[in-house]
Image 1 (cartoon, rainbow, N blue to C red):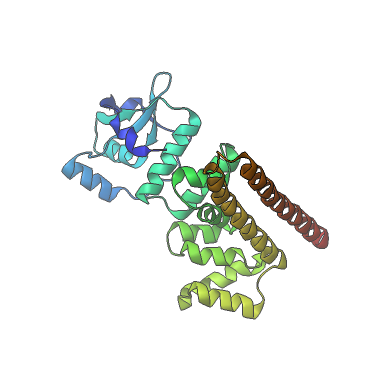
Image 2 (cartoon, rainbow, N blue to C red):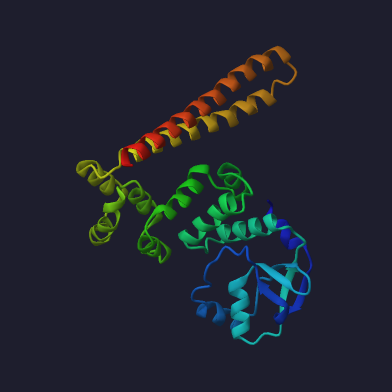
Length: 275
């Protein structure tokens, strides 16, 4: 989605009482907006909200922090760009704008990805990654943060624990995750330090190691498929060659299917072992 084109639409002033928060808003809290209030008070609202029309009001797709700041400043009318979009498009616009601005905390970002993929079922991880201009591993890793206990997620949300560090904790046995965090923070441990400690103390769960390897293998083959399709597109005038290449392509898909089958077997084995 080319979000730059959004701003080609005319800006209209809408009464603040007709603006409501969207259910597809990716922020769970507007956070501290005191500095934003000061900025708008001094310079005015420099960037309009993005909204969409509903029955007798307008739903805010992007700009809820700006809206709350305007409320505190007793604005009566707020400049808005009106877009006629469906639920999926509204959610995607909200994700893209916040990711580009880098204003979301990592946990809100992770929830927004999880909702798009699983709650609403609007596309897979690879499709979402392409739409927002991120890599598939990046999106997968962000969603992986939601596997951590709530207290650790709160540290990440407050930016007291880096996502890269937190992803190492995801791979640790659940009964050791919480006790590892104070040690990491106290000693300012790097990713390399954590990996060494995990290896030395055997804190990994065996299933995690297997599943991480399977996931990486799938990503590698999927990347290969993308490059392979580019080759096929360039030889459309050679039917015999295309036929041979398509056979190879089917083989790559078969490899992915085999890995998925191994993943299922591994998960079943772990469930049986712990039952």
